[in-house]
Amino acid sequence: MAKAKTIYVCDKCGYESPKWFGKCPVCGEWNSAKEFSLKDHSETKSIRANEAGMEAPHPRFFDINSATKLLEEERIKTGINSIDELLSGGLIKGQVILLGGEPGVGKSTIALQICDSIARNSNNDKRIYYISGEESVGQVGLRAKRLGINNEKLLISSETQIEDILNEIDPNKAQLIVVDSIQTLCSVDIDSPVGGIVQIKAVVEKVRIFSKKYGIPSILIAHVTKEGTIAGPKLVEHVVDTVIYFEGERTTDYRILRVQKNRYGPSGEITVFQMTSNGLQGLSEDTFLTYSNTPGNIFTSIYEGTRPFNVQIQALVSRVKMTSGRRISHGVDVRKVIIISAVLSKHLNLPLDFHDIYMNVSGGVNITDPGCELAIAGAILSSFLDAYIGNVFMAGEIGLDGSIRPAVNIQKRVENAKKLPIDLIVIPKASIKNTNVKSTQNIKIETVDNIRQLFNLILDLKKGD
Image 1 (cartoon, helix red, strand yellow):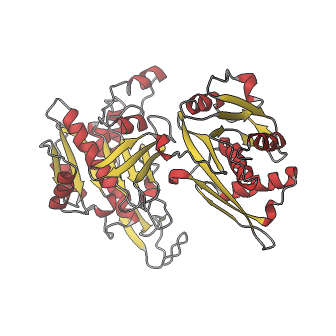
Image 2: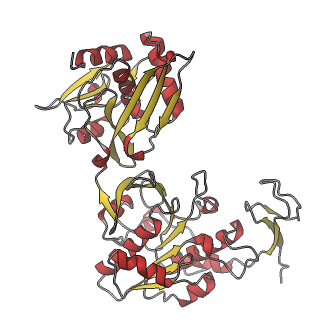
Image 3: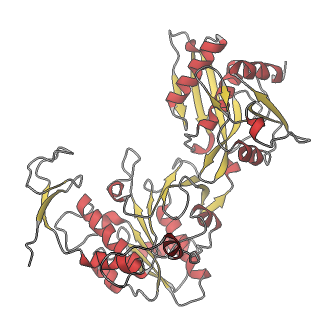
């Protein structure tokens, strides 16, 4: 019989070492080393073998067609259209989802709504298991009552030991497992504080193995740190199949769900919800758009996952008496604003260095798509010139030489923009060659080749003179 190996794991960051250490070389914590004995992983191997359709415990190879057929099965519809679109059609059997967000943003609410919707739309005797380690059964019941949820198929538990929980779940009747949250659960195999890195990794691994073995999808709810990143679970993101993160300001009613990782569909997909007294309600992304008659407002489209998403860029340019102006941005990387303002100053000979520039994306959306750079430049110029140019949509990238270049999937962006009550669409001139973009009776399309042409176009469109 082989001798069991011993390793030492940092309880703060998860660093592993074959030797004991007083100070963790990664996070710098003292006395955080915990001793663990490596156990036999034959159970895990057999689970993965059964998942792949292999009866024998030794590895085998499959042709690509056989591997594809293993996941060619009907998805489990949640019954919430926004969630189904976010997950590319619904849940996959055995899928493990990590749901993160700030406290109070609505993680438990949306999870409870998903449980209720699946239970109501299923025509079998399957059960939904909701494990709440943070709240008592009575507290979850009060939330369910507020949301109008009354379903006998939804089973609730406040147990915190993962082994006891999994032993009480009937694999033949379970349709979904929800853990709220993974920081509150513990494993008897781990001698470490609840919520520690080692405990979290152990809990997630046990849930993942159980889900894969019996083909039961599971949702793991996780907290975030003050810096806005998923705490603890950040180390287990590679283990789960899907990572979904709540965005948006807690001070508003709007919530944005973004898929950061998805093994069963495209990542980057987003959907919009509004927090109401009856729970989270799905909304159109056009909810964030306001039609103002003031300068500095430009519509644009960012590409998220497989579809364009309309947003509104707002800019305020203000003259200052200081030697240099400030750049403050919300929703757009401030470095992008600095670069674009520098390009405008250089090639248009504008004194933007002596102006403060404030940028904002309505609705609290955070955008990184370079296709919004033309809209940022247009909003800055509109505010600087104090020029109201109407409801205008812009999409394109800006080079350091002042050129305006096509954005990815420009045709889909334009087609999505035509659904808005706008007057004009401005795109790069090079986009016309490779797309079938045409003006309509109500919407005119203008093309620009560089920022000088954009500057002249805004002057021509200036209204109210």
